[in-house]
Amino acid sequence: MTHGRVRRAYLGLVGQPRPLPRSLARRLHLKESAAVEVAALDPHGPAARAGVCKGDLIIHLADQPTSSVDDIHHLLGEWTIGEPLPVVILRGEGQQKVHIVPTEGTGT
Image 1 (cartoon, rainbow, N blue to C red):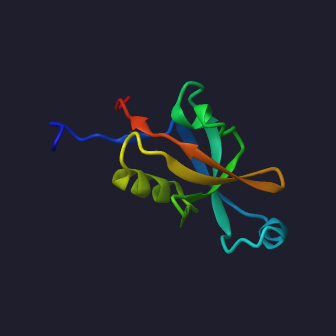
Image 2: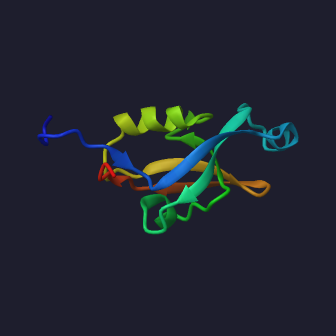
């Protein structure tokens, strides 16, 4: 209400839940059994600018496990727009940490 409207953080990606292969989770010493797969990206959005690619698996946002799209929405509801968001992704057989700077969503 500080801004006279509800502001929503925007990453510019579409995700879907995906189970993690047990062998990969064991090899990388992960406790998680599921992640959010990046199914599509806004090519000019914050996630694409941070280096996230279609097919990446998001396993953590701000050190919180993300096994569903709801996990991402919940965290974004509490995150400050413009503050870098640490994200751990799986790409291929390895982990990477990127920082996505959420922008204000347009509501469209």
